[in-house]
Amino acid sequence: MSGFLIHRVVGSRTVLSTVEQDTLRVGRGAGVDLRFDDTAVALEHALLRRLPDSGGRAGAYEVVDLGSITGTYRNGEQVASARLADGDEIGIGGWVLKVRWSDPEDPLFLHVRTAEAEPRPDAPPVAAPRVDYAAAYRLRRGLFNKATVSLLAVGVSVVALATRRSSAWPTGAARSATVRASWTRHRSTRAARGSSRPEPRRLARPATGSTWGPTPW
Image (cartoon, rainbow, N blue to C red; front, top):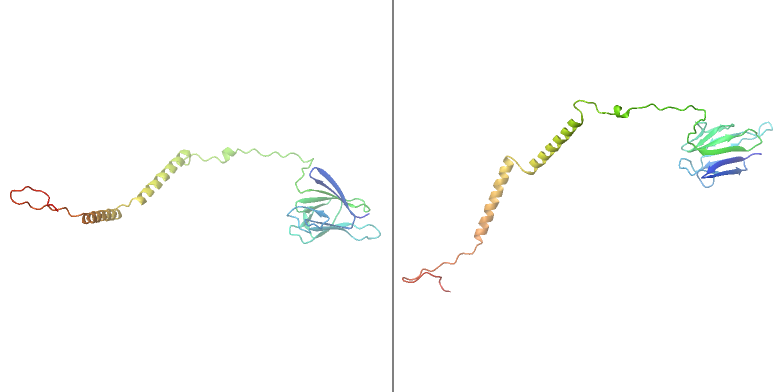
């Protein structure tokens, strides 16, 4: 019996599906047999197929990459095509297909999981070394400490303020020119105001024996 038996976990459910044919198309497209919604998987990424019978016995299975950009891997090694054996792991995008196949008459069993690393149950625990980060990144004592940094910041602020004030008020020759121009403008304004004033009314000289007073109009 040829074909594929696929075991995968979807959310909180375990799904077991069969594909009763000699080829299994894997990818992200809508027309594939085993679909992964993963941008690292091409629309038609890889093909699993059964090889022709040899010597009256059922043929083996192989995986073929269909020109994908991210590649197809068998046991961590990128391959264009490779025969599969029991226990092999096929890497496609962010997914791993674990191969289980012992009897040539049985379909190829694929256990699908994500490519996250699985801890080995027999691996000894690894103790991370203790690092004193406070001592490792502490500033060296001496001239470069908090006090000198604060004084340096104050000095920079004072220099910046003095520079701003000096640029706002001219000094030296520029200041003298500014004062002279301001005084000339002030005199011109006063002269213009004086010329625009109306002439005062002149008083006629009274005849002898009369009193001073305005000339009647």
